[in-house]
Length: 246
Image 1 (cartoon, one colour):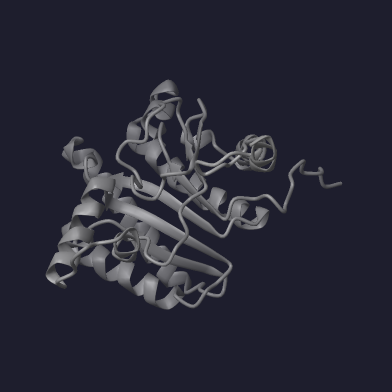
Image 2 (cartoon, rainbow, N blue to C red):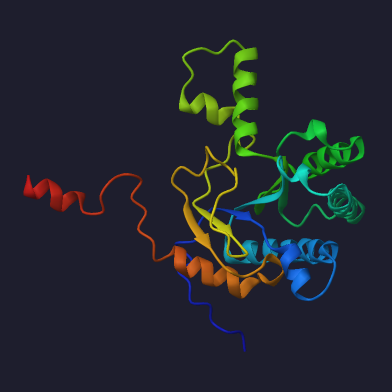
């Protein structure tokens, strides 16, 4: 018998963004190399995307590798990019683009290897018409860098008197709604230069769970918390009462 999920499916956030954190600490706690934590973390990502899709989430954004992560030991960086290339190659080899997943990329592709650039572009092209869920992966991504790149593009195109809409149109997330919900794992409580422009009104959720242990149960727990929030966007929940009093 399938266990009933205690969620209001009419109140599922359309766009959830994940700051995936804790792979290395998860591995260290088990006396395993950090590389193994990253490997399991990638497997966790695939499971969480499936769970999000099942629960009705339409867009998932992932902070996989930041512009600051280049400061990590070269051995770890090389291993991570090896994982990214293996994952991309696996997606293309399976040629499984009828699963409803549309892939997008956030970040500066130009600093990635030519092979990973090519693989990424092929996946984006082959999956672009899928509509069940968008998976937006941030590799070599930073919120500040994204805004600078957007402004450089606008300057190059001669835009003046720039509006909020102009900026949105030139971000990596152009055409996508802002994330309503940001989830960060591992117990850290900061946003680490992630989607700075887009998260102006996002709800934040911090869990002590390390990313490799984050599963459907943890996602449901987070969504239950989200559904207790009152999203006011700078207004008041009691506007009608306020107007009556004045």
